[in-house]
Image (cartoon, rainbow, N blue to C red; front, side):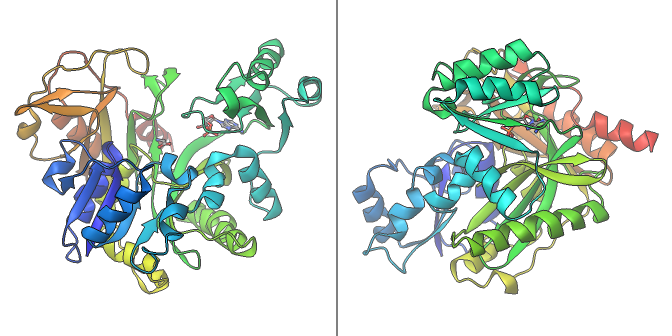
Amino acid sequence: MNVLLIGGGGREHALAWKLAQSSLLDELYVAPGNPGTLRHGRAVDLDLNDHKSLRKFILEKQIRIVVVGPEGPLVDGFHDRIADDAELAGKVTVIGPRKQAARLEGSKEFAKEFMYRHNIPTAAFRAFDHTQLPDAIAHLEHIPAPFVIKADGLAQGKGVVITSDKREAAAVIKEMLGGKRHGDAGRRVVIEQYLDGIELSAFLVTDGQSFKMLPAAKDYKRIGDGDSGPNTGGMGAVSPVPFADKEFMQKVHDRIAAPTIRGLRMDDIAYQGFLFIGLMNVNGEPYVIEYNVRLGDPETQVVLPRLRSDLLDLCEGIATGTLSERHVDVDDRTAVTIVLASEGYPGEYAKGKPIVGVEMVTEALVFQAGTRLKGDRLETNGGRVLSITAFGKDLEQAIANAYRNAGLIAYEGKYCRSDIGHDLVRAHQQA
Ligand code: AMP
Ligand code: GLY
């Protein structure tokens, strides 16, 4: 079976690595991919908006499955363009939802209303559009601090402000509704109840009828140790999550995952692909913070290494609506990934710094993200450069292995958090 994978970050390197292990795979193409994915598939230069060329490529290369890594193309209707093309009908399946279902990630208000309708636990909320500025500000008088204010649309993970200062909250609302912050994505805002708890991410795959849970993970979003400094795409991840024990994950399954898939069916919203459920554990009870219609980055770099089952077999289950017959088998060991970034990220940073030591890493997986080749030389080309995933029989060992291997790699301006997983070790020691 020939597969096309869309994307070029660490998540896509992990997807390419995993897909390449499948006995069902003939050829893997990655668009655009990165130097890391070259080991597992051919890089192709495809413009996703040039539908004619895309169709030609899919037909010529006899692509059966297209796996979409990032949310952008999905929210943009990529799935619809392929599925509604008469020449491609019945020949190819996109792993990733249609535009309508991608609104679970693309519109916070849509996601909130979906959860309300289907009794899925989430923070209370009100939504306001740009004509309702006075109402939105007046609403702050009726709710307790801290205030959680979110741009409705996609804002690269930067559309959320949490503050206890009512004046700051009002100013943020004004800026968002005025289109001065996040442009059109902020012209509607959602004001939410603050949830006090610990965050984690749950993942599932679904063909729209049945679903299978994948391993859960915790990621570390802030740039600095101790969760300080600005938000990033994610600086590291751990799986499994010690505080998400069997009982908690059963609640996630019964109260959140199952009603979500049932709700999509009831609302007649077809969904196929991965679903990422951002959760808050509030005193042992799960609440949904957000849905993402894709896998997480860097969570994928710990989730897929723990997945023993064949990922392409699961994709085929989605393509043929037979996911219920497939198995998800998970490695019990703990996986930890450390993101190596460029100094300055998530702000300005330099590119083009030579990277050495990748071949020295033998006891961990190196997933590439912001890298490029200059001749034979690997250099930095982004904010998040590499992520190093290691296993351990327990969390402490996995952390030690990951940092030891991450230490073998060097480039000018290399930065990583030094405390990935430490909070979980401390919590475990106190328990
Ligand atoms: P989101 O873009 O919705 O994932 O929000 C970004 C981050 O803001 C989340 O990862 C949480 O850390 C935090 N957050 C979002 N919503 C809430 C909430 N209702 N209560 C507390 N923290 C929240
Ligand atoms: N690591 C968070 C995300 O992928 O959205």
